[in-house]
Amino acid sequence: MTRIGAGIAVALLALPLHPAVRAAAPEPGGRPAPPLSIIVKLKPASAARGGQGLIRRYGFASLRPVHEGRVRAAAERGLNDRQLTDETARRFGVRARRRFGPVAPPDLSGTYVLQPSVASPGELRALVGRLNQDPDIEWAQEDQVVEASFVPDDPYYSSTGTWGQAYDDLYGL
Image 1 (tube, rainbow, N blue to C red):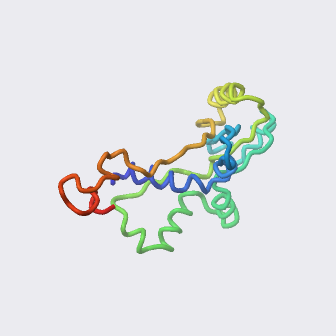
Image 2: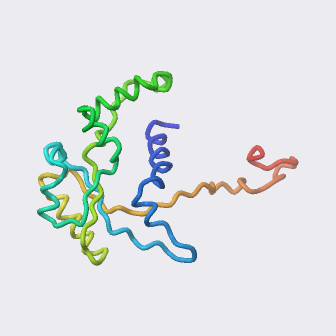
Image 3: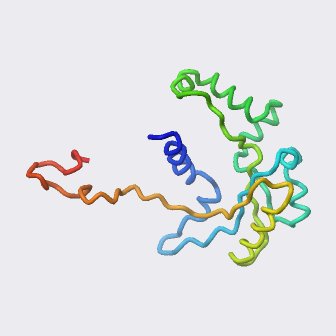
């Protein structure tokens, strides 16, 4: 698996843990309502202020870090994101030595979930466009529900005996 593929796999596995994704899960017999929330990456100066300028400027209902525990740990111990990553690598040395090449993790500290007070997906898209023009924001995007399919589209996945063998075609998977 490539490094990019592994990163996508980790993101898909971690996604259901995110509160916004859990909240948008379908109820029995119903379709999920689109989550009217936005994910933003603040520029460092705005992130240092906790994004308080954005709350005042746009009147958001709430603004909270995506990685609340990490932001809290950094503030309590007076560390930046990179120092937290290095500390984790020291604590889990055996795992850290298994990686290939140098690590350049993204800075996770300035990523926030916004709960805007908008009534429709169209208003949400317009707000995302305005946020992407804001000088305090690196990027903004609509928070979306994603679904992962774990069933391959290989025609031999669910067949048996295509070549005369007694086991499933894909090695008994």
